[in-house]
Image 1 (tube, rainbow, N blue to C red):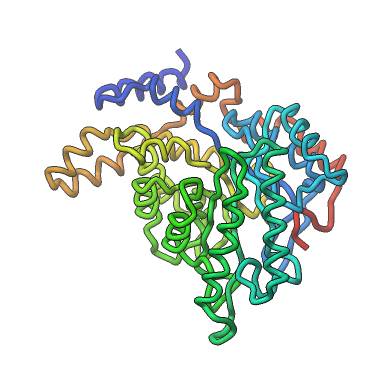
Image 2: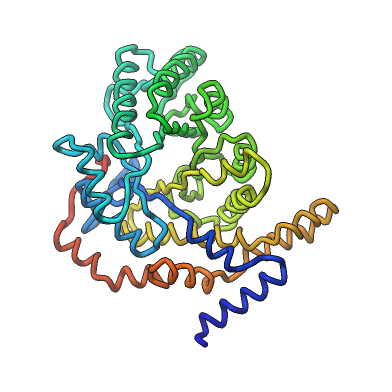
Length: 414
């Protein structure tokens, strides 16, 4: 018996003693899916500089090729989010783009409108005081609703840079009403079965007021819009010390958690590799998600089973494809540990007020070495046991560097 198999069997025995069947954990992990972002494969950077990376994708087809490579290495990244107009086909043939993705073994995921980069949006998009600007933003978002049908997407992912920099710059109640009107018009044009995910951000690039500053604002608007509107949680969009897992638990229980943009931050919206700065936080978030998936309560259970898990990261100095693979693996590891939490025993300790023992039980799950478990999952999925090593050995990086060269800028960043 190999050392890896022996470690797997030992973990299986340990979990069985706590009432957890390792075969059930493996089956659940094989259903996990993490969507990667098209823009993550292109050159990107901070507000100050976008560093060109050899081989970074320039065209949408190149981004799809890279996303397909990540899926081959991990087995759990079958879709790629697109950003319009960054990913608009030159010939306008979205059906062909969708077909190309499917030929590479992946599919198009969330459609993300861009209503923040053009000069006309300097005072906002749906919140702008200029009616003509609001109309153009609305037209673009309605165009993206049409694109969803063409690329077989069921998610419209909305983030806005709207806000003000100075007190008195605009009427805050007026901006709220403009947003509500615009979101309602977009919501009414969603394709059948489509969802609108509303993202929030407490500051930047607006530094006095942000039009969707927190999860409560996004949640309130989603309630007004209807059941197909849900909140999108970006891990980098919170102030220091915010308890994100509590937000996740609340939205799960209300049936309004729609998706994630996974990343990590040390200070603000740093867009670092998810789990790189605070892996315990990522585990605790997944603990709430896994707990809801395994529970009998509705709507938490069905909501958890329909969450859109997406990466949204800015790989500026560490490469493009390898860090995306690493991000997917970090999500896989956090989820695996969350599935290994002995929930019946945890509930007993919580009900008995055993504070320390409940905390220790959860912390012990975080410390589990789940690498043998994940190696088994990857083997059954037909993916490499060590995806990062396999990627480096594949020669893909050297090939795209030779074929693509180094572009000055792409992916929407300048």
